[in-house]
Length: 77
Image (cartoon, rainbow, N blue to C red):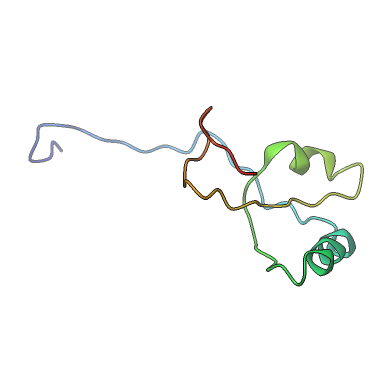
C-alpha cells in the first residue's frame, strides 16, 4: 500500500551478524588501565570482530569531541 507521499517501502534483511563476545580478560585490563573506563556492549563488527576468532581482541572507543563519525573529518587527539 502506498503511504501519504505515494511511496511504497519494503524492508528486507540482507544479512545478519551475531554479536561478537570479545576477550573479557583483555577488556577488563584495558578498562583498569584507563582508570575504570566503562565497559560498553557493542554490535560493531570492524576488523576486531573477525580477529577475535583467532586472537584475544577488544575494542577501545574514543569519544570524538566534535561528534563527527565515520567521516574523513573525524579526529580525536
